[in-house]
Length: 221
Image 1 (cartoon, rainbow, N blue to C red):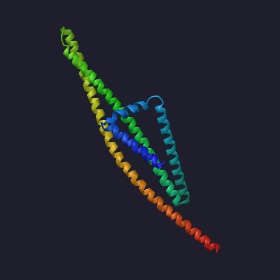
Image 2 (image 1 turned 90 degrees about the horizontal axis):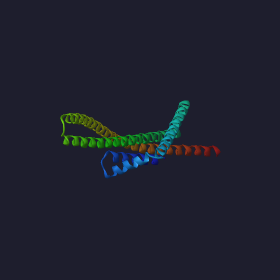
Image 3 (image 1 turned 180 degrees about the vertical axis):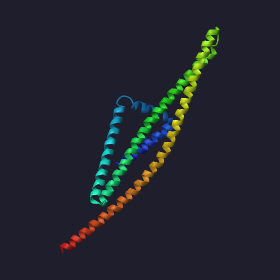
Image 4 (image 1 turned 120 degrees about the vertical axis):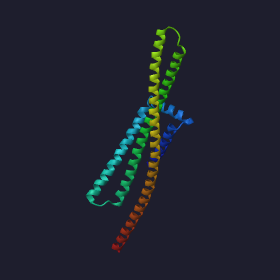
């Protein structure tokens, strides 16, 4: 389960990096995401997300039960401590997977909007040039053309400001990706520490079992 979650996290981080930076794979990834969002793709994605949420809720419920047993007993036994650490790590990783999935969806949406805005800007600029080149005729026609050109220029400025806003959002997403890299490294270090704690707890349990069996042997003799 943990290996699958780590694989999903690294895959999603690689996908985010591909979308953020202009590489030959970026267009292929965008086309693939467009196809995923058509037909039965959204149903499959929703089903997988719902499954992750259910498993996450199960882990949180198990953690709550262990916490309740600890409060009732007053002491956290080694087995519950290991289970608590395992459920906590799984819940953190599943939440991270869901968060990265949401980031991929939003990033893909903003990239598509930015491409549409750029195409609209190019069309408006071409139309403006054609109007400017065709300035001939009567005075009334020239005034009408001038007014229309002014309107188109204001639209171009508006679209340029929207493009700048989208570019700022992309930079913000790049910053979030760097932060997620650092957070992933922290998760890996925490996972190594939990493995070491788990091994120590198993050794303690084996020692306790050996002591118990030794005492039982003494009693029988």
